[in-house]
Image 1 (cartoon, rainbow, N blue to C red):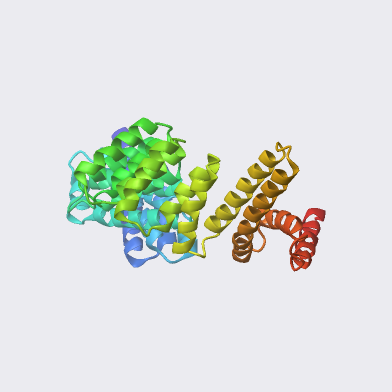
Image 2: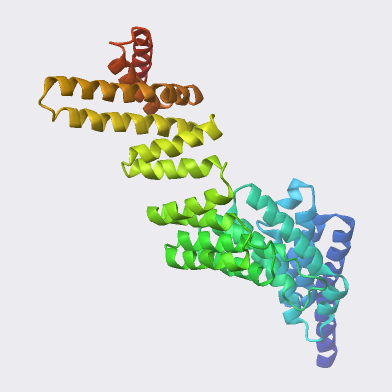
Length: 391
């Protein structure tokens, strides 16, 4: 009799196990039919039952469900998992770990499941990047990389995923990770010179300007005809406050690109910041000739004339001879007059720029005594500035 009851118990346990494992089979069927709420209910039950919670097919089904929720257009289904693709990958990996005979691995390979998951992760990463969720995008691209570099992925490796991961890392301020991915791109010769520029920028962000300079200077032999090498070196030296080095490369760049207004603009601003006003005026004048609608050049040129005139006034105040003093003051005012059209153009390009308006107020005030037409302009700009300062 005792044996009879033991047999019944064993049969009951077996039926219970089959029942729970049957839920997994049902879940897979529900997934195929798009009935994802029923599938989740079945899988959730299987995950807490002792007979199925460590069964490889339970995790395989969960992986399928997670992937299906990501691909679904139904908001209710999409809300099932906070990060469905990460959970899908973890579930598939767990399923293979629990499967001693390798049947799950065979399904994943023959069904190209990791291929479709990699595509999903690319889509997710791109969406996250566009939404400025850069850390989330990096996580997606890194998982995509892990999948495609594994043995369960069939097909060609997408080299672009390393570049995508690098960009996401840069925007997440994870520069060491970014360098790793851009180095991979360079090894694979993906996008030519571009990954090297990205590496240099990442090293700059880390404060390692020596390494950034080493990368950039080494590119001249690798890409001898690429003008951007010189431009990137100019940018590096400006950011590193190595202005003489920057000016040296600006001179080189002008030889091959003599009509590039930005080269004259940058040189002019460097000279302006060094109080080398005549050189600044020469450079910025050329920049304005090449591109008249650039606010920074118009303002910079006006500022160069103003600063030069202010220096002339200081020197004039040291002159004791009245006649020579008056002549010196007249020369300084003539330089102030030269600043006026550039500041007015800058104001036209950016009507609400506070510093431009302050400069114009000073110019109108200084020059209105000799040019009565400037008095109304002085009153108008003063009224506008007073209104701003009262806010």
